[in-house]
Amino acid sequence: MRFHANSVSASAEGDYYQIWIEAKDSAKEAGDPHEVDGPYVIVQRDFEMPDDGRCYVETHDSAYIGHFRLRLIEFSRARLAFELGRKRNNYVEVSFAMDESEFKETRRIVEIIFGEREPLWC
Image 1 (cartoon, rainbow, N blue to C red):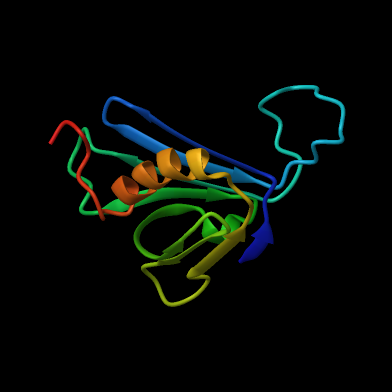
Image 2 (cartoon, one colour; image 1 turned 60 degrees about the horizontal axis):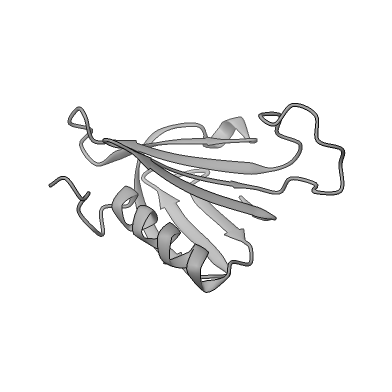
């Protein structure tokens, strides 16, 4: 799966980490703030319970939804690319544009989700 996104957000709350990337149409009138109006990908990891390194992935394409082991291929100010630990429908690539300050905070959360950095509480 590949698409271009206009919005990238990352959050951490306790043991829970999430990145949300979507191709929302900013020109549309703002209705329900939780309504998704284009391609998106959400990657979540919860460290409260042992997860065997699995993350929850949700997308606009039902073939990519579920709990998977993930391998980070690239995260930069212009792109996130990763593989799902399975044989088919196993590649996700999203292009976007971030400024340096957004990238620094988002990178920390992405590295924790993908197991490249320990959560702060460890």
